Length: 245
Image: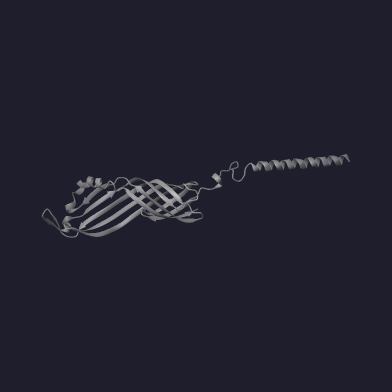
């Protein structure tokens, strides 16, 4: 009888010890809910990953490719590049002094870094700021006479008159400011959003290059640069097609 009581006492003690161990384990586990990082585990704020996306865009600055990375819920980083090539646009100009054709062309290439800030939670309105480095930013107008030209009572043929090119170059760093409409990142996989803003280009450098009767116009380069000093805004109207990963 004593042996039976002793056996029951040992079984009761064993079961009590197991119950206490289970309770302790449960309490320890509850110290690390899913929303809190456990030892040796790193999670982002609120358990959300930083979104990443690529975008293809088109607009006034030509074709654009960008990588987008969400820094914070309201802040995103964009890194990309743009290129714009305006093919030769030919027009005929007739004045009382000369009849000529003009050919206009432009070439802009940039690498840019932009920040998108969404001040209103859940809304698609964004403030955008950043800068770009324009590796190429040139525009040119070439004038070529198609008829004779009278210069100081001397009649010159079109070949003798030659050609005159007016060139402007904005190469350098340009800050950017603008707004964005619709969300920077898609809710699921794909969305379309819009950018409206402007680059403020460096002050342009102007040059004249000519042939024939116009070959010595380089002396007017400084005056051309002075006259073009206010031509520094490059407006941006851009439609973005964004894919999130």
